[in-house]
Length: 241
Image (cartoon, rainbow, N blue to C red; front, top):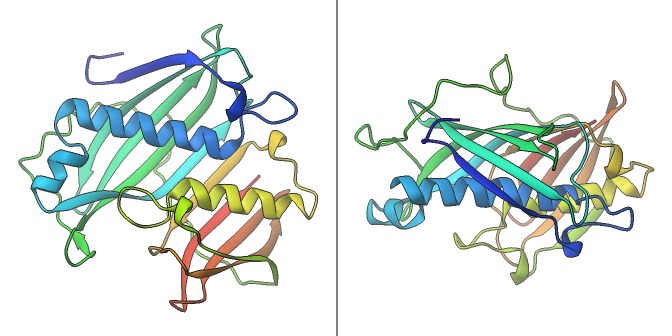
């Protein structure tokens, strides 16, 4: 891999795994997010760099394909790189391998920049060097997931302080954790997950009341909508297979 990519390799700790010794999906997403942050920081377009420009990155879409989840006490290596930007959106891919170098996780993501004052989308500065590589883990472009039609409520919750990140809103990994816990109540086994698609639609803050709505199943998968009752708007849409 070229120098413009970042490789992070370490042992999977017990606290990231469940009773079957496999990494929880929300911890996998945590690792993707942290790798993206570390890579951006190292190349000059990270959190502090963007803050100086009066803005910050937000994840808007993510697609994750899983061959198998990483195992406890085994080495998991994650490589990430930027694929550049088009207009208001920037793109980043990931490849994760087990201790034998076999690829077990692939992911692609879409990001936007928000103005720190208005919290509205801002143009990505053309002078910003994203050190893009011409390599994609998927042959097709990431497609933004649209909310389905809710059929019934799976669970509801009130957002606590521990769900917030440095930007003051709910961290994206929380949506995945909430959703998979909800799907478990209707028989979904997260350790058999093969595909996750998420679209982040609006910010959620401490004290907001959120409903997880079941939008039905299709081709052996499930679709969910996270609805922010406090703000009366959709917060995220998710498809899990």
